[in-house]
Amino acid sequence: MTANRAWTLASYPSGWVTEANFKLVESPAPSPKDGEVLVKNLWLSLDPYMRGRLSQQKSYVKGVEIGDVMTGETAGEVLESRHAGFKAGDKVTAPAGWQLYGCVKGELLTKVDSSRVPLSYFLGCLGMPGRTAYFGMTEIGQPKAGETVVVSAASGAVGSVVGQLAKAWGCRAVGIAGGRQKCDYVTKELGFDACVDYKAGNVYRDLKEACPKGIDVSFENVGGEIMDTVFRLMNFRSRMIVCGLVSEYNATEPYGVKNFRSILVNRIKVQGMIVFDWLERYPEGNKALLDLVVAGKIKYRESVLDGIESAPKGLVGLLKGENFGKQLIKLA
Ligand SMILES: NC(=O)c1ccc[n+]([C@@H]2O[C@H](COP(=O)([O-])OP(=O)(O)OC[C@H]3O[C@@H](n4cnc5c(N)ncnc54)[C@H](OP(=O)(O)O)[C@@H]3O)[C@@H](O)[C@H]2O)c1
Image 1 (tube, protein in one colour):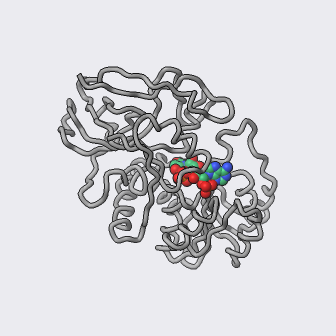
Image 2 (spheres, rainbow, N blue to C red):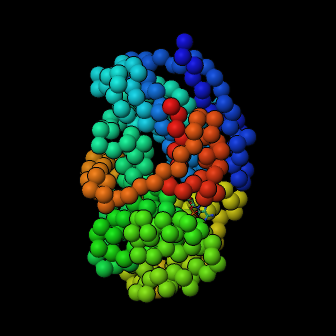
């Protein structure tokens, strides 16, 4: 019998999540019930939202219970199907969690075509992070050619796509990232016009220099002091997409925004977003992103750790900015 290995939640973190908050358990691989599909997970996606699931606080999705398999999206292959829409050998993405094998209801699976792009891309630039960038930009940011778009966590899964979309649409793309190496990648490899290293110590001065005409669209991924500084440079009738606040996910106290007044004075539209607000329109986003990736207009980088054992370490590292590109765990 095939053995499954799964990470379950052992305890809720208070403050920083640690590897000790998870427990690795072994059991026989599950068998699909009627309407379910057994998936062999080949790739596991690690995402900042997972920190929010390690809590019983009210959020847009319920948290993981103690003893449950940790939530997560995977890309893999169908081993056995009891759902008419899938057959053995199909490549899929699935909410199968931090484990080697998962039984998932057919309606929760997405069949993907990995003949032109690697399967793992469907967890990154062609998956949830890519769609977040696409719908945040098209629906909320709505940048026009010639405008300046600023995105934080610019070398990451969402941020790298945001800036490349901005460039493809004729905007000035400015990133904010941690460290020279990430900033050089953002400008030299991804083609952003500038990238501010927030660890270098003078974000306001450097961002002002990088945005001589101010900021028209801010794609906010980190929150805290960086977002507060961005507010100081936002233009009249500019837009801020509040996509993520990763700098605060492990904090015990929320950051108090000081430059809120800029919203009033500049009539800034500030809107939060959750990618599944556009669930019905995923096929449109998927196609637009695939066309850009295949045409070489979206470049993409992955940060890969090997083996299911690495998942907790990978999540802690991701929340500390140790990843350089989309964080994945290679399972097979
Ligand atoms: N609303 C939605 O539907 C949705 C969907 C997907 C993702 N998101 C959000 O989008 C953001 C980016 O997600 P992602 O998957 O693309 O992750 P990612 O950018 O690939 O990785 C996270 C990055 O956040 C940065 N970071 C971590 N701590 C930070 C801090 N204290 N200050 C500044 N930057 C910090 C690090 O980059 P540096 O080294 O450059 O600091 C790290 O590499 C997250 O906030 C996530 O929650 C939202």
